[in-house]
Length: 173
Ligand code: ADP
Image 1 (tube, rainbow, N blue to C red):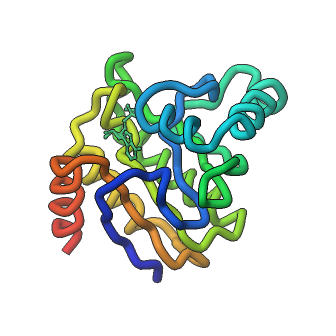
Image 2: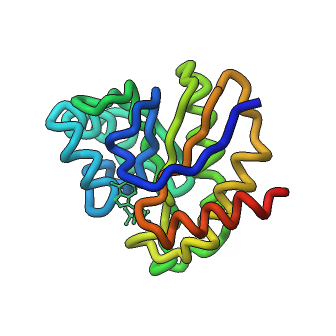
């Protein structure tokens, strides 16, 4: 059974096999954690995303889905891009957010990833309360098969988010 841990910080510096990006459907980069990942990864990642979009995802990646690329200059091997639900566009179904976490784990398992770090998907520009994100993230990951995965690390960016993840983790019992 994979361990779950919470480490406050910057996801771009995590020494894990894969980090998850809270991308947008265009896969063309954006602000928040997406911008930070693209800045740290450099032009190779942008080019890979552009290629994916042009080939496999001409209409963009769907909300709740996930897809992997290489990681450019980042210390990890893969970036797994997932698109969180945007509350400002009425995407309020928690199953969409849960799907980001399950699909990312599925993709990670297919790649043989053993260690993976997640941000608080949808807790920034997409308007979800971080306490809700933390609860959905923790319960979803705890319930999902983590065969082959040794470590799932949640990386909340700031102390408030970190407290929300710690509370949600404690709530798992
Ligand atoms: P979304 O559009 O899915 O809401 P955002 O990137 O706006 O995505 O925010 C998601 C979460 O990621 C927020 O809690 C934000 O504080 C956090 N975040 C921003 N930069 C980083 C980073 N470098 N590492 C980890 N988390 C980050």
